[in-house]
Amino acid sequence: MAREARRLVAREVAAARAALARELPSVTLAAGRPVHLSPVLADLVRAALEAARLTDGAVDPTVGAALLHTRPWLPACGSAVGLLGARRHSWRDVRLDGRWLTLPRTVLLDLNATAAARTADRCATLVTTRFGVGARVSVAGDVATCGPAPAGGWPVPGWPGTLPAGRSLGTSRAPLVDPATGRPAPRTWTAVTVEAADALTASALAKAADLRPDTPLPPGTRAHTVS
Image (cartoon, rainbow, N blue to C red; front, side, top):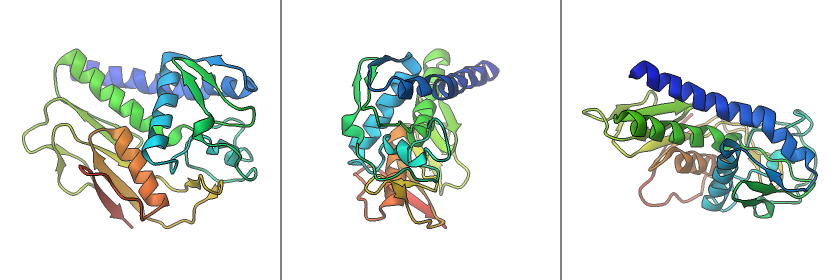
């Protein structure tokens, strides 16, 4: 069962990476026309918009234009260096209707800040649903759990204590782009990890707290900062 669960997770992670590497560039080439997305990419875009709403735009998938000098296409939300110029759009300009996505002509999506967490959440849920066991899945530093936890909780390296059932972790990964300016945020050389009910929420809040240290965390979450 463990081997089958690992294979399931590997397939889901590979599908997410393929959607970002092969499908996302076509969204940019559509030049403002609606694009019908695969279920995987539609879910990743929806997750990015959920994170933007949750953080009031601190995590914004439209910062991609700031990265154009270093990447021809941009599957990376909130990370990297290199500037294109002042941003003119925000996540509110992104239209996702089911699996149909419409972007302004000058918007480049950047999904990396949320893609790993969403994938971890999806994988943990799939493992528990298919095999009827508790699951802990880590993707690029974001940790999702589903189902019953082992006695004493889920151990996670670098996190004080353990994770009980129904709790997940999300991390910030510098450098970040400040959506307010479209420019890289100052490097603080700290990492923020947040515990929340799911990895997507935790990851979004961790990046928002890293970018804006005065960001209030909602009830039921907690943060840990490592220098």
